[in-house]
Image 1 (cartoon, rainbow, N blue to C red):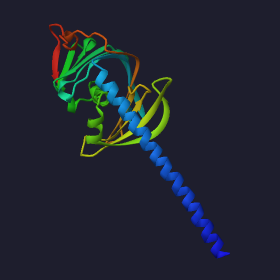
Image 2 (image 1 turned 90 degrees about the vertical axis):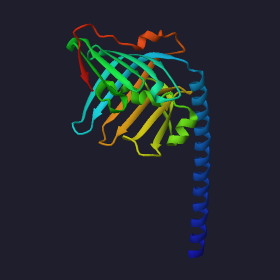
Image 3 (image 1 turned 180 degrees about the vertical axis):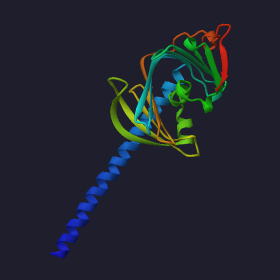
Image 4 (image 1 turned 135 degrees about the vertical axis):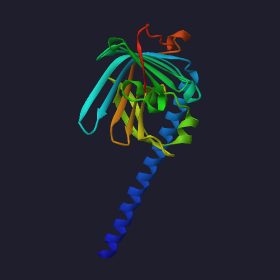
Length: 231
């Protein structure tokens, strides 16, 4: 009887191991295809316009700060050359410009403009971080992150996506990131988990790729009398 149990146990283990191995191989195949489509999307995208929603969650207070607006985006091979313009409409009108590693957040109602470095940006000025993940090439992702395929999910409203987990290979200012990628290889949602467990989630909807964007869009010129505040 013990011998039969042992044989059955080995048989069950073999079946489970074979299934697990085939599942891993399948996941790796899917991941390779996702990264390929992302790379093709990245290479073909010269500009991007879309509606944007940002959800910042404070883990200690259990509160969410949600902002909505529109974004205009020029991707680049390096982070310091990326250009972003976000015009927030909710909960308040604010204008954010990112470029050259710097940012300006203009708040008309307060007659102030906050300026600083992108890497230290907080609040609505920190939206450029998650956006940067959305146009990384396959080489950049593989070089900087251990990428895992987590399955199919619905994101950014009702878009069918593939969910990827990104674990930094080197020390960063955050713990991990997640991407939700549509069938065309376009990331439509990104989420960053900070070291204090706060999160920032960006969703893009009504996406227009390769739309014409005038260069001066990324230059915010606050009116005279605006108070300039270092970020």
